[in-house]
Amino acid sequence: MELSMSPLQIYVEKTLAIIKPDIVDKEEEIQDIIIRSGFTIVQRRKLQLSPEHCSNFYVEQYGKMFFPNLTAYMSSGPLVAMILARHKAISYWKELLGPSNSLVAKETHPDSLRAIYGTDDLRNALHGSYDFAAAEREIRFMFPEVIVEPIPVGQAAKDYLNLYVTPTLLKGLTELCKQKPADPCVSNLFIHTKEY
Image (cartoon, rainbow, N blue to C red):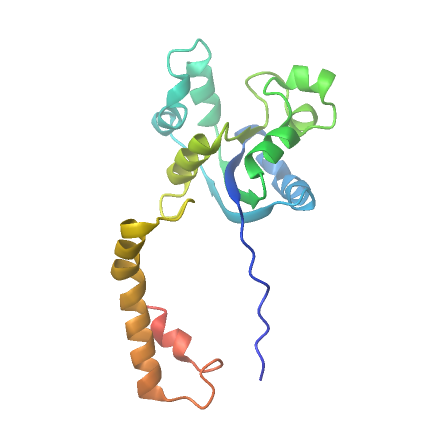
């Protein structure tokens, strides 16, 4: 029995996308647009943030006049956070979103997501990371367990491999040697090593 494997894909860049509370009901429609635009949705989760979490997420906006309204709006209901990946993901996602003010977007970029789904400057339907540093910070905030590029190199990579990869490989390969399956590619080994 042959296992079919999808071709290896390397994503140069990842960005965070958020479907904001007032348009969560359009999630499937928006995900379809995202996929048709060449993005891969690497990870997705639906959650509701407290006002405190919203304040922490939008910490760079702290002190601005709209900050209290922003945190109230973003904590008003569930939202969908997604990690999007593709070549130049940040710039392509920002282009697909359009201007942050939905009223401006309707005038200047009528086909953009914010023009279609947003209602004003605050309720602009979707969020996108501003740049690579923001994407890295925001992805870690929404998905604390995910590994964000760039992958460590040098001593940091060796430490990661020694701490996480080598012990898992050792246990899996030891189990494989004990079982000696006729075809290791289709054995039940995965079930045994999954817990490691």
